[in-house]
Structure formats: C-alpha cells, structure tokens
Image (tube, rainbow, N blue to C red; front, top):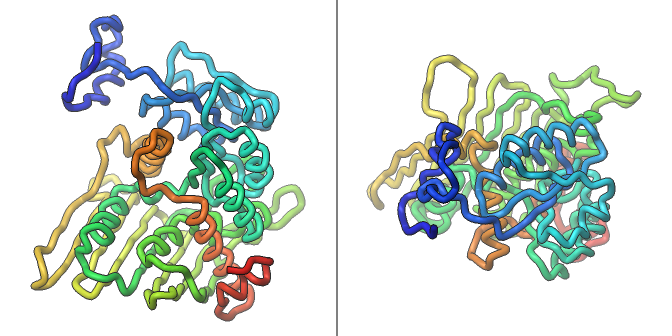
Length: 404
C-alpha cells in the first residue's frame, strides 16, 4: 500500500505492541523500503548512534560495519539487532572491503579524529557518498587535504557538524539568517558548560595529538555555528585556557593527558562581526547558550540537562525586538523519540539531510569547506593559548603552507 499525506505516526509504528499486525495490514505503520545502503566505519558511541538513527529514518539501511575494536563491533551488533530485528549486519575485516562493497552507496566515518585523513584517502577512491564526522581532521594541513579531496569528489561529501540540527540552533538559524528577525548580526556569544570528556577506546580524546586538542575536538561545532552566523571568514583569534581540574594526573600507556578543560575565545571576522566562546568542562551538567545581538534585536537560546529530579524546561529561545516587531519566547524541541536518539535529535536530522543531499534536495549541511574553517578557528585558538597572544588566521594558514 502507498501511504497518502496522513501525518506520520512513527512513535506508534515503533511500538512493539503493534507487532501483531501482518505487513499487508500496515498502512499508517508501513515502513518505506530503503533506497540507500550505508556502511559505518567506526562503531563506537557515535557510530552506534548513526546505526540507530539510520534505521529509524527509514530511507536507508545500515549494511555493515568496520572497526578494529572487537568490543565496539559486538556493541554495534546489539544496537543493530534492536533497530532492525531479523536483519543481517555485515562485519568487514578491512577498510578497503568496507569502502568498495558494491552493495552500498554511502559511507559514514565515525572513527577517532586522528584517523580521518587516512580513512578518507581510501574512502574517496570508492566514489561513494561520504558522511565524515567532526572534526574533519586534527590539523590544518590534514583538514585542507580533505577539503581538496571533497572538492574533487563527484558524490556527496558531508561533514558531521550536526549541532546545526539541534532544535535551538535550527530555530536560531531560521530566525536570524532567514527571517532577519534581529536585523544584521553584530556580535555572537556561545557558551558550553559540561562534564569532562567521556571515556573512549584507548582514551584517545585525552590527548591533543589524537584529538586535535579540546578546542578542535569539542568546540569545532560551536566555531562552525559562529562562522555560519557571522557570514564571513575569521581574521584573528585570541584565546586563553588551561588544565584546571580534569585529568591532571591521568596517564594512559605511559602518556600524560594534555588537553584543556576551560577556555575563553574571541574571534574577529572580515565583516566586523565579533564572536566570543566560553568553555568549562568541569561543570555538573550539560548547558549551552547562544546570544546573537543585531542592529534590530537580540536572540538568546539555551539547552540544559542538569540531572535534577524536578522537571524544568530543557530548551528556551527568545527574540527581543523592542518596538521593531513582535517579541517571541518558545521552547524548541523535536518529538521525544527523536530527541532521545542522540544529541537532542541532531544526529537524526543530520542523517535526514545526508539522504536529502543524496537525493538532490536543498539542505544547510556543513560542506567540507565549512568543516575546514571550523578546524582553522579551533587550531588558531589552541595556538593562541600556547603562545599567549592573538593569532592572525592568514599568518597561521601560511605557516601551514596554505595561501588564501
């Protein structure tokens, strides 16, 4: 049966209570047949999230996984069994086999940051669609090489900067960039306060040489948003930061952790827009906030998860415009089953838009060029902390062999 324009009832369709219905009697609960097949490279926490949301979304299915860690493979098999009961998940024994299987048309790369460059060099040769998780690389030269590879790639090459699809940022982008609700943006402020970096296989995220540093690994999401709202290239970056609380005595395989756990970053753009970022990674909650000030108003949005027993709003967005136009106050959100799938639903909609890109539909996903500039700002901030002085972006690019 072909469904009409009835409202989607996905939460009911996913409810096992309706498992008694034969396929021929499913109309509102019918699943569209997948038209795309993807392989996941790297089946840790992020890879499993992509497995889950791909099966939820329905237009594609996960065909197989590749990971050098057997524990991660076993965990991904359990997630896939829950998301696609009765289906078979292929487990590959090499990267080359994963990338070149003719049964699939897309590759989702979710491996540790430092491995991205080597994997992309192999994956791009397949000619398949690629979704590369953030940050695209740990260094400016590697990010530039990936951007060049992406530019020559004939299929879709999307960077997984999925915070663009968190509810508060979707609405902020719509209000500030499409509706121009606060006029021309002049200043941007973003804040993230959260718990420390979580555990990873071999604890790679505790070391700058594997992660790119905190301001690349974690904060590229926010620098991407700052670049997007500024609508211009960064000129200078000044940052201060330190290791104040987290992992001060942490060692793994004889190496000591060296990542920042707090920072303040100021970015100046070519068009005069100024942006600031405030990071603290020893807070007992997850809280992020965006404030945009324009010449006709102010937009503020936040997202909060504080683990307290008393329920209170987890999101908030307000647009204050004085006497220019109506003021708005709202709580942006997705349906619970989407928000609970990971990153407040952002990974789900990253997947939706990856498929939309493949199908030629208009999206606002991050390109490889935008992914490159998010790494540039993060790398400049790391360099500024080390040098204790502002970093001029063009100078930093030249130092890395790149002329704009």
